[in-house]
Image 1: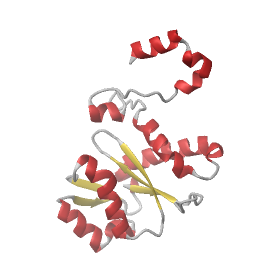
Image 2: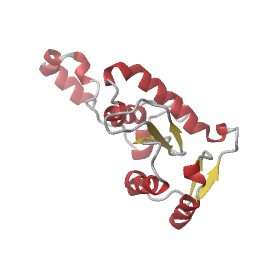
Image 3: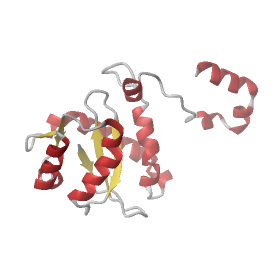
Amino acid sequence: MDFVVGLPRTRRQHDSIWVIVGRLTKSAYFLPVKVSYSVEEYAKLYIKEIVKLHGAPLSIISDRGAQFTSYFWRSFQSWLGTQVKLSTAFHPQKDGQAERTIQTLEDMLRACVIDFKGNWDDHLPLIEFSYNNSYHSSYSMAPFEALCGRSCRSPVGWFEVGEFALLSPSVVYEATKKV
């Protein structure tokens, strides 16, 4: 767990992204947040977005941010049965997986920032989808495939061929045949 901070404020007042990466499948969750969120708000978001899908993890590696070192957060994780492991001060590479994911996320945001017109949080679900369906050489598949045991069936990218070509029966036939 880590944060991307210092982003331009959006319509919904988000100014940061909470990045949560599963160690086994490397599935990533990019949650738009405000720097001013309380620890209780992070706990609610964590239940709503992570625990509901995967249950409580056995352990978490996070940075030493105030959100993760507070008594409430540690008590909350203890209640879930999760051990909190903090990365070593001045050595955040202990959680290198989150650091590499953040670097990729920042590259993806930079590549699209002009199109987002300052509302990057509107497009964050699509960026998360793209990340989780991209090939990872470390285990020769996409995180979605590692998590679900199958490739993701997705129309994303079909729009690139153009509307006329999309309506062509041969394109539809070839696309469905491949899926």
